[in-house]
Length: 389
Ligand code: PLP
Image (cartoon, rainbow, N blue to C red):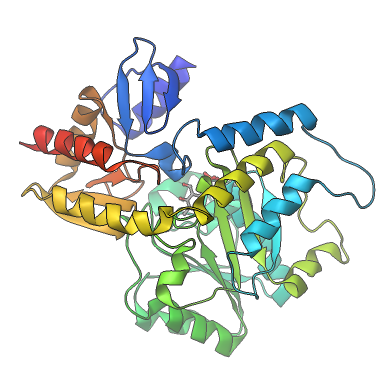
């Protein structure tokens, strides 16, 4: 386990790190020597309610005691799955009424792409440069980072790339296009928010040519930006959304969501349009349900916006060029890659966990649990300032 961790870190950091994790609670991770590390990353946004949240843990344990995995021939209902789907649909506009649960965000991307092709009977997909939608070969085909994808070519044919936020590129969306897939806020590219009416204009063009708009809400969804879904900030309703990460409250999950008519093409000739043994696993669904309940029934959404302001007000330093993002999806853009790398490494030594972004190497990610306290924010920010000074 430790060797794997070191290997993974070695791929993303020039510094070898060694942290053997013993347990985690709330906003803290503890190593085997009982040192606490304040977690400003939250499992890359997956631990939306922090570590070992009592309601999520209780839901998991209760479900484990009832049953774990079942498959029954014909119609059968698993209560946690159904309840999670209903809870998700309650957060969405009426047109997004049908949920397909998967095991990961990547698999949700795969499902959404297949759905768009089946529904439109078209094959072309348009994606954005520097986007990230996952790491299987289909998801990589629509992820626009050439240096990551080069070794795996040829990937899926029929994918064209546009520049995110560039309105002049929208004309590339035509009657051949099955779908345009975009992150609501570009994550790996550097937490790039959509400009003004960009997403609305893309949606308008999609409607004109009969293409679908898929928004990848894997990072932006489930409360991270201060609204339950990121797209709520931009006055646009996509045809399909993809979610994952924070939905499971730390458990592996994904989902693609569309309207009922669209989704029903996956169950008609050929049936079983997207197959998964474990997607919608009852234990994971129970964790997801507890997570959605907690976020929708608390003031965590409003708090995310307020906590953003607190972080922005505390982190003023000449070494920080910009703070990008919104809500609790923030990235410090440092003056150089070297500075970002040193910041992340030294903060870990000081007991604060930050993380890299995939393609913007000058960035340090700040995506703490939505439940982080003001006191913990102040503590983490003071470590960052101490390291920078
Ligand atoms: N899409 C976006 C925007 C992501 O950030 C990620 C993961 O980082 C994915 C898709 C893939 O999700 P997963 O790692 O759960 O497969």
